[in-house]
Length: 116
Ligand SMILES: [Zn+2]
Image 1 (tube, helix red, strand yellow):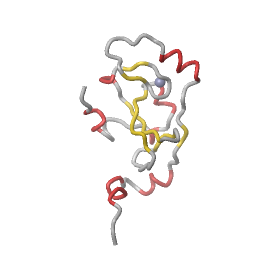
Image 2: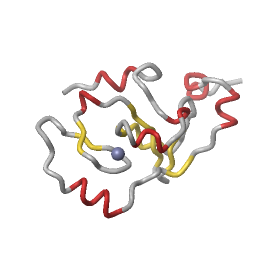
Image 3: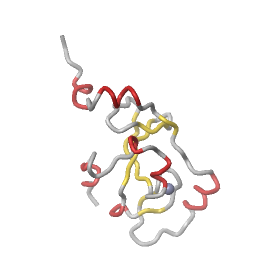
Image 4: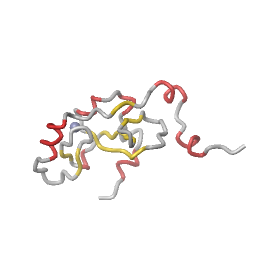
């Protein structure tokens, strides 16, 4: 019998996998995103919030979420086949998803080790 490596390495807890569904990305309204994306970014704000496109300083990012190609947010610890990776969200926008969907430095420190 061959074990599925991907499953075993991403395995967190069956309870978590079963109770939290993928949820749609809570994008801000188009006019808000447009306004934010057209803002003049302050120095060092080279990234932006996934939900509202507000410019952010990568050094100050406190939360990420994992998004799929079907624009769903993946619960922490769940293995999504169509993941696009992890994206920063702002400190107020993080409240748009429950705690179980917020990736923090504690749950995934490798995201904070990106080269500048
Ligand atoms: Zn935001």
